[in-house]
Length: 248
Image (cartoon, rainbow, N blue to C red; front, top):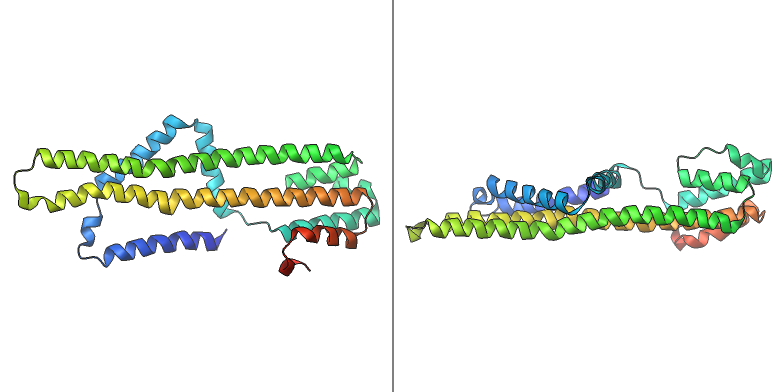
């Protein structure tokens, strides 16, 4: 689980909550009908805009973005060096027995064991990369759309509240509390957009870029193994994908 990211989101909510509690009237910042209106309206727009499968995929990807452990580029380099060591000691056919938690790395090892052409391996990995990027793009599009819609739904709630308030207004002195309550819908919409949807969308975008880097490392490592490079040369070649401080 990525504790740092979850801590960042919780810290942002705590800052917002602290600002509310330190205000002169913290109870005025809590309005359940406005919150339900924003949540319900945003969910309705999501269902109307995207197929249910895309929404389920977005929920799963969002959970994995925080629940799954981040695989660093260095770990991928180390895995490819390990494959080079096995290939050097036991022969290239030994890679067929490799079982990796990374399905793409396992597929690459089997292709190397079959002595596949490097162009075939590159096209296969490119297909994996394009399919992965497509899934991430769908999830990012869903979250970006929700981030844009939540403040708009909040504004609709505010306008509806203002219309009801002005229609039944008889005492001008009682204008303040209903106005504050109607504005809470816009506040909740902006809060969801800024602290929930946009951070998750940004995290998925970064995750897609990191995955692309790992796939490039895997392909370059496979090419090195097919050229019968020794593990030391594989390490030196793949280290170019890493920042200087991460090269060991």
